[in-house]
Length: 133
Image 1: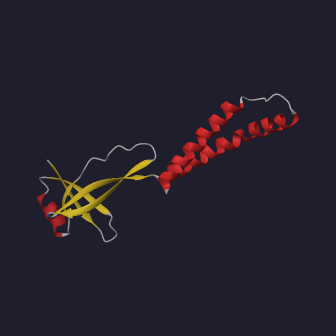
Image 2: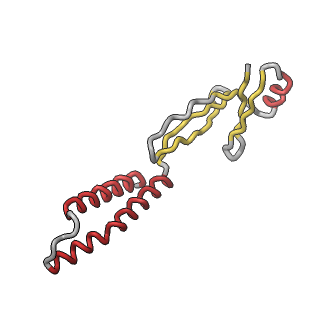
């Protein structure tokens, strides 16, 4: 049977050791060095744009792992950048429709569909930006 021992260093870094129950001398050496029983917990699944961050506390003489779900700002910022790029890529369609309307020509694109698509992108950018606020 394996025994999990852990020690939290002065920087908050966890050092875990897996020992076999038969390694009594080694286990004693680790315990004398400040290692305690380790109580791990399962990492939660996260939705896109979120990450699970673990932390460790000493409870009743044991190192206990817990998890907190946080926004993954790097992923969210990347998604926002990609959406803004999609808007930029369709700017020429808006410009072309505007030019055609000024000279009385038929619009080359379905302006309502174009507007709806671009507005959906802007709405998603706003939603993602609100997660970062």
